[in-house]
Length: 320
Ligand code: F6P
Ligand code: MN
View 1 (cartoon, rainbow, N blue to C red):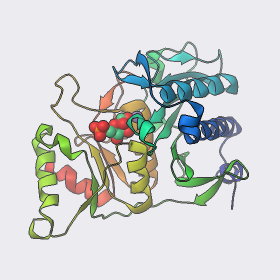
View 2: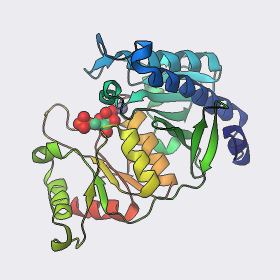
View 3: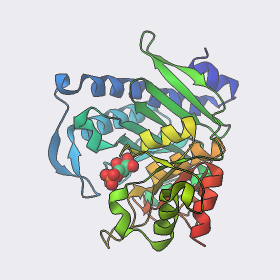
């Protein structure tokens, strides 16, 4: 089996990007250890702080954010970072090729129940000159790499540098990631969907109609039975989609009029959309391809519909 280093070399990933991906991978191995020790390391539970999103920070949100910040500042080639847990971009060095956006621990509500969590990252080119929030506002098409690390029964890394999507599994004896699936390909058709059904009454009518038709099963217009899954961690749900297909959505809803969308564009939707497209799937808001969105703010939220290409296309028909 190829190591991460060998797999990056085979894809002719430039040295500087390889160094950054190695930094992210090494940090995720440390995060994996902190997550696995859980209560033994005293890392469970909440802090008394809220992040810029108004969410109470878990201890592990803060710990993992600091681990990534320290590692990226030390990497030498990262100009600045934007994190779910930081109000403003953090400048890492005067020079450097990259901007990194990350969600240090996605699925925080799963931390204290020993369920799936993960780290999501997106790498953008750094501009010349001074860096500000504006520098980060590049469309997802500009990403030079994206991925996530899932701290599951096995720790796995999903990675794309724009030449397909690959899955690596952490070999805990060697403490390194080994390539366990090359050229991930998402089945175009599926009979599995993922949505938080408790919000049904708050969705827009196109999503209401689409899900209604799925629930009608064989007797309905889709003429087949669908199964439903919801992990409540985007990393877990997207991982399942990469492994066996499916459609995942966190649609527009009117539950909180000031917050029509839940997922964050820069460090959730864009990196996942890049991984999914590179595996042959699609990702949309319902009205626009995720990777084509011109961002307006680093903490911007968007509706997300992603996964098996034909199923996403069917869902988009309801939005026309
Ligand atoms: O980061 C936001 C997030 O935790 C995602 O990982 C997940 O898909 C979603 O929110 C879960 O939302 P809810 O708690 O509404 O099910
Ligand atoms: Mn998240």
